[in-house]
Length: 558
Image (cartoon, rainbow, N blue to C red; front, side, top):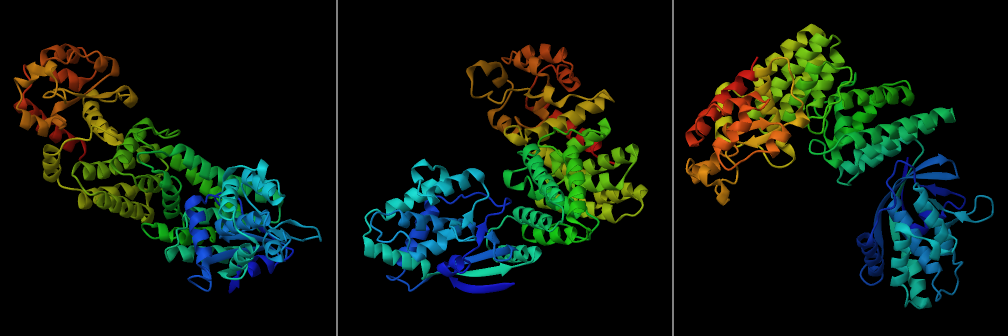
């Protein structure tokens, strides 16, 4: 491993027969006008404000000695600098388009004939880059063409002397620290260390780079392609199947990756934060005899992960008992980190009966914390520490006790849960309203026994309409309700029920009496019960609110 302070011309031109290649795991060329302008301003400060400008670190991995260097970090800067040089080369005011300062940066001579010095990973971008390199920029398009046009416009009125100064500013007075590595792992470790010092490097991209790099070291090209293809497939699976609200875009790969690593056979921290992810990833990878075995294991875990995870309550759960799927729906609704615990249970238990019971207990743990108003951080910590204890338990039959102990020690008391449910309105609007739906379903299913409700076929219904005091058609409701008290109670448990969509859409909402007919004939038992009330006022909402809150506590107790 070598790190050297270099001029840009030396970075590119010191390797006359070399091709710089952007590896396929890297993002495409994404710089836009803001970055182009920043670089342009930096160039123009040279000689007027500063003698030289430091452009940061470039990390290169030697793939083929003297022939191919992979750009581990720095592709956006290297591609942009070469585009600027091509814009200068094409200026009608440049005296010598073959100026060696340009040639050193954009051309390579592996066999005494010029070729492009840079190869981009994205084929479309690479094709457009080649058109510009060949002097046929009129046919080019995309982001590289936009960058080229931006710099062509900046130098449009430059005379020969100004172009000469600009070339010197780029070739001689722009400096970088070039870090050259021959070992794949070492290159990515340096990349990660920069991330630890504040450089924004996605750890999942680092992991992808590490796998691709390890694949290059395999002897068989078929095996190389298989490993790279499977790892790319893993990324695509996670990005395609995990969605909001539980998985924000930035977490669709990162969170499953951390939770799978935590559930590996290699000791890891209880939780893995973003900064530590790559180090833990490499630690687990290094324990396998080959990258092929590691990728096979990781693929198996991803397949399981996607069976037990959900975006809302949409769990596929193939091969998992139906009752266990419902427990996972409750568990996932209560915590965005629940898969780390359910994966621990799944990997530790083989019998369906034990799996169902342990998932049930895990759902009790998470639901009690959510109903009791525990902070998201407290719930997360409880989920991760319980998952750790499950992994440490050598006897699968004792896992049930492990989770029960966590429920006893980590969740709020019944009294605390009751006070929270009585005092707070439920989540009705927005993407998280399925949490309220599932609470109501858990009450309904206690009445129905083994018969399970189809969640997508249920609507949350306000008994007294939410807009009671905002619409003249609700005059009958207003005679029974106090406006100030109703604003506090309208979204509480006591004013909510479930209905099938057809019943919900056909409701006559002008009065409680008109709604009762639909409730009476509903297939939803908690709606049928509402029809037994003679009237609907503040006292009725308050009484039902406390009664249903107590039912929830009983339902979510052990």
